[in-house]
Length: 351
Image (cartoon, rainbow, N blue to C red; front, side, top):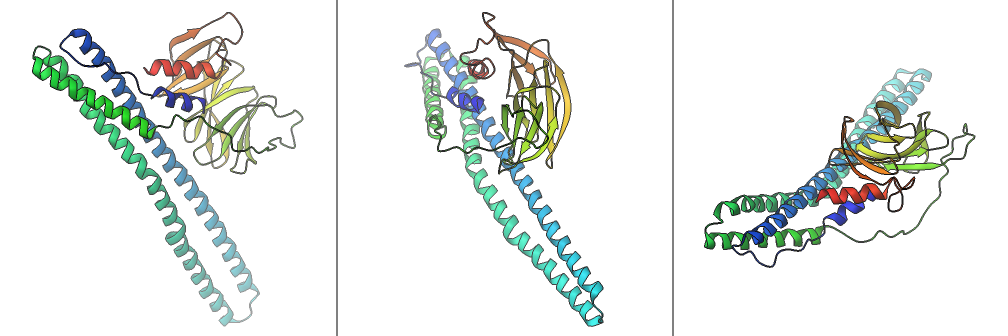
C-alpha cells in the first residue's frame, strides 16, 4: 500500500516553461518537461493495465469458486437421488427420481449460466470500461506528444515551425496534466473503522507477531507471522484457511503476480510463494549478501532494503545497483528502513 500511495504522489503536475522561444535553453526545458510528461503517461497506462489484469484474475477466481460450489451441490443432489432409488421397490419410483434428477440439474445449470455468470461478467465489463477509457486516453496523449517531441529537434533552424511545434507541445503537456489531475486521486487515506481478528492457530504456542501483509486480487490476504515462522492465508472473513511453515522469520512481502508473492526473510533470502486453491507452495529463492528487511516491486524490478541501504534487483535476482546507503545507524530510513525508504527512492527514480 505504501508503494501505491507514493506512486500516485509521483504523478503530480510538474511546472512547465513559460514559453518556448528559439533559444536552446528553452528547448532543453521543453524537452525535459515533455520527457517527464511522456514518462508519467506511460506509468499511468501501465497502472491501468495492471488494474484490468487484476480484475480479470479476481473474476476468474470467483467464477472458479462458484463452479466448485455448483459441482458440490449437484453431487450432493445426485447422491440423495441415488439413495432414494436404492431404497425404492417400484420401477415407477425409479423413473420419477431419474426425471426429477435431470430437471433439477438442468435448472441448476441454466440458473448458473443466466444469472450468476452473466451478472459477474457484466460487473467485470463495467469495471474495466472506465479503465479502458483512461488507458486509451493515455495512449492517445502519449502518441501525440511523442511525435511532437521527436519533430522539434529537427526544425530548430526554422523559427515559424519551431514556434508552432513548441506551442502545440506545451498544449499537449497541459492536456496531459489536466487528464492526470482529473483521473488520479491525491487524497489522503482515512480510516473509517477497524476490526480485530485472531489468526493464531491451535497448534501454535507463540503469540502471533504479524510483520507482513499482502492482499491478493481475489480478496484473500497473506500475512507473515514472525514468531511462528509461518506465512498464513486468510479468506475474505480473515479466517486462516491455509499456511506454510517457512522455518525462518518473514519480515516483509510484496505481490509479484496475482498468485505469487516474494517474502523477505530474516536469513538474507527472498522466498517466492505461490497460492493455488488455498494451498501455499514454496518456489525459488534469492540468496542475498545483506539483510532483507523490506521488499517492494515496481516495473518488474525488486527493491530490497537492508535497513541501512536500498538495492535494486531484477526478478531473476541480479543486482542492478545500490540506490541509497546510510550506515550511521541500524535503521536509517525516514521512519523505518524497510518501508518508507523504499517508497521515497522509487519516487525519485521514476523521474
